[in-house]
Image (tube, rainbow, N blue to C red; front, side, top):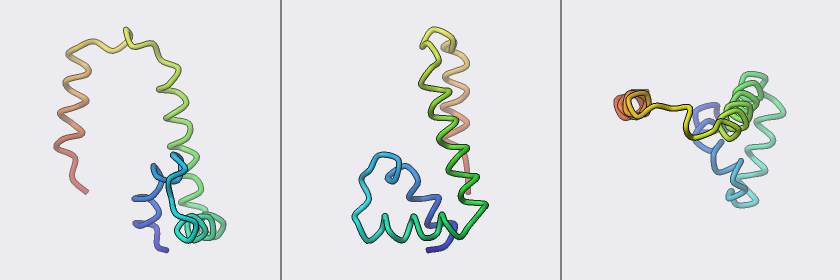
Length: 75
């Protein structure tokens, strides 16, 4: 597994929806790649932080700007 594939699978890994073979490859890559280990930890931290934010803290305008930014994001 390369880093690009790892990044594509992070959400499925966190959801527990990877099949056994893919999960095994994911974990093997994680053990060998410090950059992906840091990336996964950043995603976990982001999810935790966002989950603890009350809905009211994001204005409608801020929400719309964020959604627009994500829609136009290019890899």
